Length: 349
Image (cartoon, rainbow, N blue to C red; front, side, top):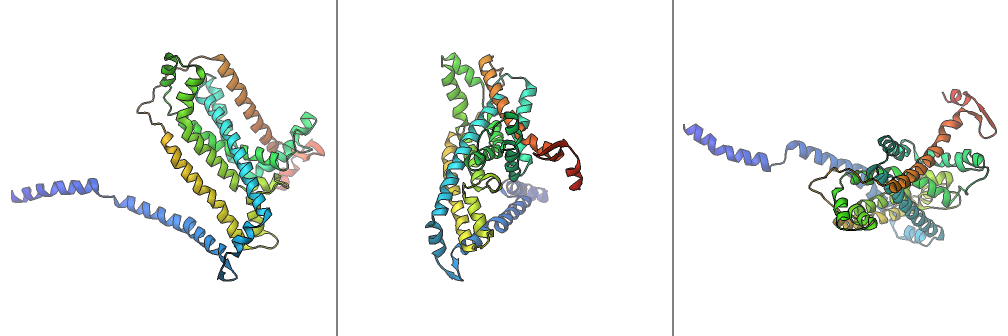
């Protein structure tokens, strides 16, 4: 019997340890993640920071002074902010419109599936492919240009970058907004209408306000994807210089200067600090519903028709740009000999 009582006394302690203690597996996973971040993120950033102050083996601010006093760098930095901000805003609006079509309209289910599929299609291709797709679509001899009979816009420079960045960032923005839409309780829109609110006020209070934090995150994500991308500027940037191409020229140009390249890279990290602060501020706008009510959406032919047309235009735009990628390989010599041929495929085997 004494042995039983002793065992009984130890049981509560064992249970408390099981509840409050951290499992060994979690500790191992945690330290593995820390090690991965240290090796692949912290260490390279530390080396980059050291390199930015290293001039001929000694500590110096000469590289920072040279880069920050360069009119070319400041112009490229301003261009990057302008094009990245503009494309992020356009991307967020388009992604919201697509997500609204999928979650808040009564369009057919197959159409919603098509919208969701086309919205994430650009993720399957590298960004430099977008530039070539734009050239083959809207260039002077591009497919869409030939169909229209005129070139709708100049593709090299701001216009080409804007189009490429929007296509590049729409999938990420759409997935963020679309996911949040699924956690919005639609019964509040019914309550709002019962209380006598007009359609615009109902939209603001029951749809837009719960999405403010996600829309902000979508904008920031799209901004930094555009700000740091090199593939699209390399193909359609033209004379419109951005920071990504400046960094490439400093690091891998005809006369590499790794110290100045490190400075440019450190300058590109500064906006990320502000983005983190903005995201932390937007956290207070997050909505958390204890229960999501599934209700039937109200019928509104005007709303459904409008978003069907808008989403269809976006899908046609994306598909038409990428269609040329699947057409050109089967053309003898684009755009001079347009006959069907498998020679290009055979040569790449």
